[in-house]
Length: 145
Image 1 (cartoon, rainbow, N blue to C red):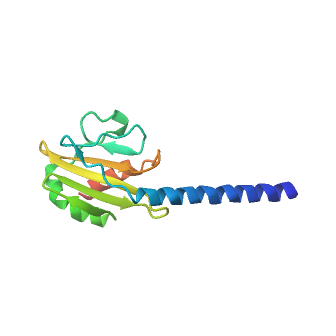
Image 2: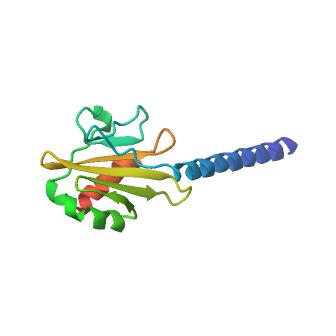
């Protein structure tokens, strides 16, 4: 019985430490910002699997299709309806943030208008994997548009 109690206490301790680590990462992500344009294009995705992009040269497993040009004017409304906050708007660029409900992780979603289409990039600010959240977000935005 003693071993069972010790095991339960140990597991509870690990769960608390894990939750605390996620909470801290969530706070860290809230202090960043979208990478913005690099040489007139959305930043490339990092090596981690928590990013998708429609920019040319994106790895196939991270590639999504660009949006139609008529989506541009609807983006701020659709972003807000999906729980995001527009942070920056320019003639050719929109940056938005989406915050997760539980730990407050912030993901950046950026849009670039050009070449008769709207490119999109959605990426987590911290961590390695996102469980497919950014790809799902892009699909949800596309459907709403």
